[in-house]
Amino acid sequence: MLRNAWIAVLAVMVASSSDAQTPATTAAPKSATAAPSQATKPVQRADSTPQGKLKNPYSVSDKAIVDSGAQLYSKAACSGCHGGTGGGGICPPLADGVWIYGGDDDTLFRLIAYGSQTLQSKGYSRKAQENVVAPMPAMGEVVATDDDLWRILTFIRAQYHGPPECKFGCPPSGGTGQ
Ligand code: HEC
Image 1 (tube, rainbow, N blue to C red):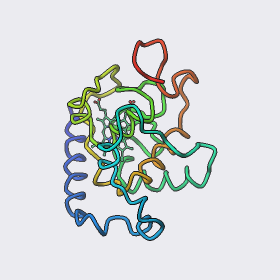
Image 2 (cartoon, rainbow, N blue to C red):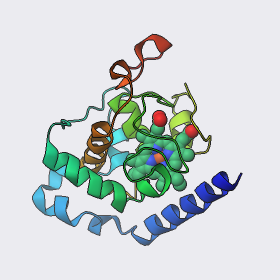
Image 3 (cartoon, rainbow, N blue to C red):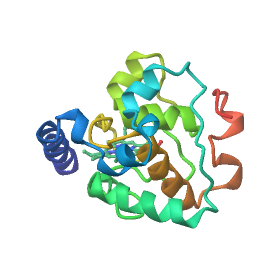
C-alpha cells in the first residue's frame, strides 16, 4: 500500500516535470546539434516502426554508451522507482531475468516510451509480475530522443544478472520473446 502510494507520487512528479519541458524543439540540445536525423522522439520512433522491429543499435560492450546510458537513466528519474542500477527499489527490478511484458528490445523500448497502460492498449500483454503491480508511467517525453532511450536500455542490459537464457526474454514461456 505504502509502496503504491509512493509510485503514484513519483508518477505525478515525473508527469509534471515532463510538462515543464514540453517545448519539444528545445528538448535535446546535444543530439540536435549532432545530427538532426537522430532527434526523433521515442514515441515517434515507436509509432513509425512496425511491431517487433525496434532494435537496439548499441552493444553492452561499448562502455561509453553504457556510461552515457547510466547518466540518462538517473536524469530521467528511472532510478527513483527502479533503483540506481536497476536492481529494483519501490518498483520491479530491471536486471533479474523476469520480464513483465517481454525482454526483447522492441517490447522494452515501447514500454518505456508509452508506459504500461498504452503498451497494453496496443496489444502487448502481461506475462509476469514482480514485487509490485502498478503502472509504469510513459517516459517518452521525459527521455528526449530515441537515441537516448537506446542508451538507457543498453545501460539496463549491462546491469543484467539473471539467467543467461532469459536475457532477452525467457524462451520456454510461450511468448514471442526472441
Ligand atoms: C513512477 C515510477 C516509475 C518510473 C519513474 C519509471 N518506472 Fe519503469 N516501471 C514502473 C513500474 C510500476 C513497472 C511495472 C509495470 C507493470 O507491472 O505493469 C515498471 C516496469 C519497467 C520495466 C519492465 C521491467 C520488467 O521486469 O519487465 C522497465 C524495463 C522499466 N520500467 C524501465 C524504466 C525506465 C528506463 C525508466 C526511466 C526512463 C522508468 N522505468 C521509470 C515504475 C516506474
